[in-house]
Amino acid sequence: MKEKTKSLLYWFILLQPFLDLDFFYRGKLATILPFTIPTIIRIAGVIVLVGLLVWGQKQLPPAWLWAYLDLLTLYGIFHLWHMQNFKSLSPNDYGYSNFGEIFYLFRMLLPLALIWVTKKLEISQDFLLKAFAWVSGLFTGTIVLSNLFVVSLKSYETGVISGNIFTWFMGPLYGYSHSASKGFFYFTNTLSAILLMLAPVVFYLLLERFSWKTGLLALSQTLAMLEVGTKVALYGLAGTLAVSLIAWLVHLFCLKNVKFSKGGLVTLLALAGITGVCWQVSPAVQRYKYEIYLANSHDSKIDQENALLKAGLAKYKNDPDKLKEFEKYFLAKYYQKYALNKRFITKSYPYKYDPQFWIDLLKEPASVRLANRKVEEAMLKQVVKYDNDPLDKWLGIGYMRQTNISNLERDFTAQYYSLGLVGAFLYLAFYPAIILYGAFEWLKEKACRTLYLTSLLIASALLLGASYMSGNVLDFPTSNLLLAFLGGGLLAYIKEEKGRSTGLRIVRFEKK
Image 1 (cartoon, rainbow, N blue to C red):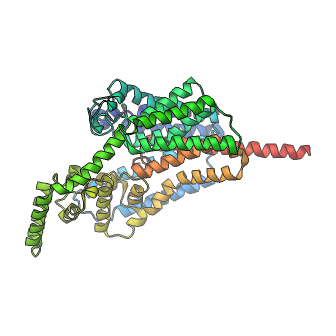
Image 2 (image 1 turned 90 degrees about the horizontal axis):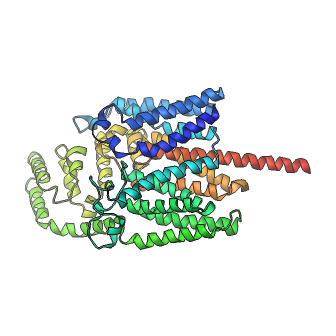
Image 3 (image 1 turned 30 degrees about the horizontal axis):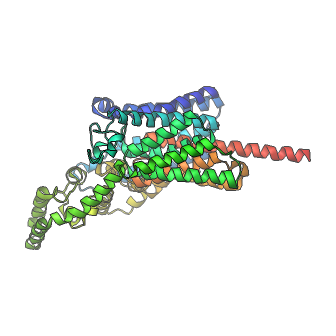
């Protein structure tokens, strides 16, 4: 039964790229059922894996896991109770529903369950590497080939790209939004973070198990991270190439527990060269330059509107009702001039309910108004301020409210608003805890001081870093389940190496 469960886990992990395809989240397929088809498949998959493991072992999960689940249940009760007392400026309570909130709390348990399953199955190093090699190949191969044949979806906006990677070198034929490509996958931020997590594992395979297959996989990984066109992917690629090389050199010359690989080293340096050649013309750099230009040039174009705003505010400052009407009129007419996101001002936090908030935002420089993350967090702060309940800090304002206001592109901060400090700790603490535990064992146990474990720790840390920088990772099933699989594999490997080391020490003692 254990081997059958392992096989199911393997195919479940390989299924994740397919469940991330964009068409599942568009049109009828996204609304035909109460939840998206990929979400239902993932929930069913994790439940089956847990059930098979419990049935096969003929024993229930350990007491500490039940205690943890009890804490989550207790938190959930208080969280849902707190949600009923929320004071909302919006007539629809920012789209809050108890059913949706309960479902989110349940869905966030899936990674924890998968970590436990993966660790209990004691998956091997080869098992994890093979699974992640296929996952990388499916993600990156799709991106690279669809980019080459100019059929990829755009990473930014909707539609299909206009040019492939070769057109980057032909001058300004297309803007970054027409050349950044995400294959046929759904969410660009999540995809970038997943690619970043996979990169250290792929480069480990290149340096430790060099062959034409691992070389081709590493090339595909590099090209895909260039083509997806986000700063997380581009800067993450450069950083991972450097960190992977440094880690390998440390293990080669200091720890002396890896073999020199001329082919792996030459290929890694060649990939760094490709990254350097593509750097300035890549969509991520082009986007960054455009954002700087837009921010610097925008404020000089609204001098006339600023004068009108100043005059109107002065004219009606002693008449609150007329002042509010003027503010709403001005926002409706000129919000585009100030480059405010239409969705933010009309749907996320409608200006007609709180025009003063948006008027204050107009006074900020363009670098603030154009930064989605800053505006998103400003809206959430305003919602919390209006509710004026100290418990919001500890129990949150609710995932449903938070995402309907703004899908804040900064994990940990997003969960702080949706779940509060208590919920964010209970649902997210085990991710950094696994990294800290792994790092501790790496330092303490010589048997654990391997390049493989180093690469897994780097991969885990990079994904958490990406989740904070770009968001939409720890709440998103594709990325958090892959991270959970990585975390479970890391724990299984440490247990195996510590057991082997203990066995060797016992044998040596008996011989003496």
